[in-house]
Length: 437
Image (cartoon, rainbow, N blue to C red; front, side, top):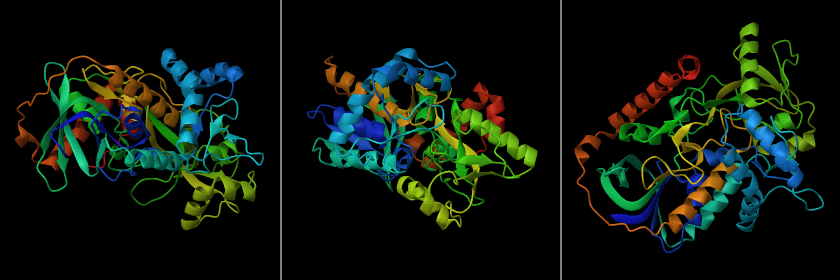
């Protein structure tokens, strides 16, 4: 790892990977990740990725998005995401992403909660894996990009309201400063702070703690989405998500008496709330999700990953309902950014789940996350490419001693972020924010 790069991108989900792929090839890029490259939440995305069907679908898609977002969305961001969607999808296909098709070769669309029609492309029930792995293959071919796994970004280097680089700690090494012209945070959300989450446990909101420490503006950090259906388990660790697509294809939510109690296609927050209320009424730890209205062929073809995982846990979804419960899933809030990832600190950008550009409002519409990450990371790369302002390389003296105890530093990070959530929304905090520590 060298001492200076043009751009440092932190995070290897689709936002980080796509930022790298859209940067000029003459830029020297360092791509950092806290764990292995593919241990990112993008890789876990099951349902799919939204796209605009045609001109007539613009208004319904727009309305579906802002309705799910409780009309708190940034309308410019929503418009930008929707109008760029077809171009993004075509680019993914050109990069080798294999979306499921109908018998006639046309793209197959599915539907999820909050959508008024079928506009979601998918690769079986592992769409995130398909997109992330294909983008990573492209990144590996780029000679201008250096990839470092197990590299913990502990802080940014700041001087005169300008980001000058990051402090990085690799395994069994002392933290070191690495300087650059631009830093892009694509570090994902904060699921690792929760007992029940669909996220990888190492994704603990480090970027938000760094923002708090350095006076970088956050926005709506308490806007945290709870997914209605994960497979119930008494064991610790990441929860297995049961994609919203199964409800879009006909799966029903049942109470203790095996009676349906909610419209499964309502927005996620509404469905999650209904499940919690039903669990209280029934005095149970979960409700049931019944696949009986989905054909066995459809289950095995469209949801093989879910089918096999449930089978491993002792449930055959073709014969019986499975126990499900809500869990933390996605962050709509984050580092305040515009549609190009520009933050309140010069030369620091934020894209993907790390950023709050307002596109999701107060609650994300299903399967908008992958599209959002791709759209605004592409915008971000474009801005960095066209920035021709003068930049002077400089080494700033850093007190590295304060980063010596990385475990203590990360525990303090978690405390800072949880406290920020509590300050913004004590009711939500008391209900959902149970720290692992």
